[in-house]
Length: 129
Image (cartoon, rainbow, N blue to C red):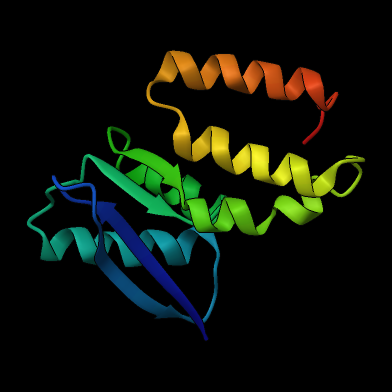
């Protein structure tokens, strides 16, 4: 069985477990059922933000049931995919280190956007998945 976890961030920027479930299927219908049950336990109070892995089914379920909740992808899952996503970049190890630095060390949105644009141009990543 698959284990689904829903993580949020508290006022101290600490990750907190909002809920979890064992699921026999990871389709939109199953995620909607889990999220509906979870929301019912919370008197239908929707979180402001929720973090999950990069699963399209859970993303669709969150958008359908909690349209005003901001959905973010877990940084651990993003970093775990770096070797695959940057496998064709010549300076792979350097590119991975620079990616992590720009994500973790950017102080504000403007700085992140500038560094992101420079990163995309430096490694010729425009138009990739």
